[in-house]
Structure formats: C-alpha cells, structure tokens
Length: 312
Image 1: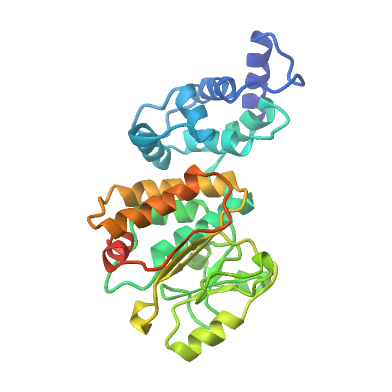
Image 2: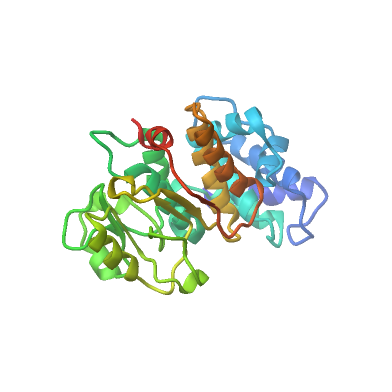
C-alpha cells in the first residue's frame, strides 16, 4: 500500500510537470497533492476534510480564531488529515514536498512514537491530564491524544503507574517490564520544579510527581538528569501553601507548539470566567503565536483555571 501511494505521488508530480527530484513546492501545493492521495482511501472520519489552503495556513501558523479551532477539532478525529498536517508542519525545512507527502501517505497514529518533539508535547498533555484530581477522570479526547502521541513510557518506580505518580524513565529495561497499559503514557524528559529552571538544559529537573510535603518537594527538585528534552512544567502547589506557576519551554519544535495549540483550543472552549483565567490562557496562547520561545511564567494559577484544566 505504501509503495502504491508513493507511486501515485510521483505520477501527480509528473502530471504537474515536475520530476520527483526537483526543487520544493509550496506547502499549499503539497497539501493539495496530499489530499488528492488521501481521497483515494476510505474516509477515516465523519466530517468533511479541509481544503489545502487551510491545512497549509495552519502548518505555517497563519490560521487564527474560529477557523483554526474548527480545523484543530477536525484533526483530532481524522488521522489522515492529522498525518498530512504533521508532515507539512514538520517539513518547514524539508528537502522537497515529495518527502513531506510520502510521510503523510504512510502515516499511522503510532508513527508519532518516532517523533521526539511529540514526546515532549505528550509530557505537557500528560501533566494536564493526570495531575491528581478529587474523583475526576481524564478528558477522553486528551487521553486519546496522549495515547496517539506516545513517545517515551512514563511510570513510577517500584509501583503500579497511575495518576499522582508519573515519572519519566530513561531506563528502557525497567520501562519494558511495566504492565502493557502503562505504555500509553508518554513524556520525553519533562518535569516540575519549585522554581523556573536556571541554566537551560543543564538544570537538574527530571521527575514529575505530586510531592507529599515540603521535604519531598526539596528532594524531588534536586534529583534529575542533565540531558533531557523539556516542553512543559505546571506547578499546582497551593495545597502546600506555595504559589502556582506556569512554566513552558517550547524550544524550536513546530510539532510541540502545534500540539500545545490543540490543547489550548480545547481548554479555551471551556470559556474561562475570571480575568486571571483569561490572562493565563492568553499567556499560554502567546507561546504558540510567537513561535520559538524559551519560557513564560505566571505568578499564580487560580483555582478556577485549575478546575477548567482538570475537570471531567
């Protein structure tokens, strides 16, 4: 099947007067050819697929407001369009449209397992999903996204993995011994700490765990690895008398920013009521709109905002 789709792509190029080895085409041209290839398959979702211009605009960060939210919602339920979008977004510096569309044509959800940036994005999604809640359940849409975006297994050491105890494992042998269902949880190397990281990637921050007290928090913040890919940190420590803090480090990953945009689009639809909630979501959205960004911090995370992020 992959060979046949690849052959069809080459034929489309020839019909357009290009050879497969020629210079890159635009994202919109690539999207148009990709959608033509996907049209030959049975439709993978129940809603109409977008036009090439919208997909290209989203991949370039030029789609905003209601059209962007509607397209992101469609991508959540359409693996074919999502694959094409990822290929276009990650192909900003691709040698040719051929390679981008070949990626899209051969896409399956588990291909995200091979995308390190998606691993970091899954870290942020995992934290938003699984921070301890009082009797709450994860949003099924977020849970499905996290499962699809799995990049590295996450579990606790010495215990069955579960919601307040999620830790990134670099030990592949230990990770392989985990129960099968634990392997849906993913995060590259990501973490939470009592203060914004200092020193960039050299900062020793590696674990995500809900600390049981201040002593645990101090020991936890001092443990970790120097070599990790960190996308997000979310501190919700009001129960310890600490200020909540949002800290995001998105680096130069287009996939990570796109995944964050999807998470934010769903959170924004919960219609935050307070000005603080709106300011917090606006600051987070600025991460997506600004492109590569080092960090963004807020002094507090309100109870209302936490409720919207972690509600059923």
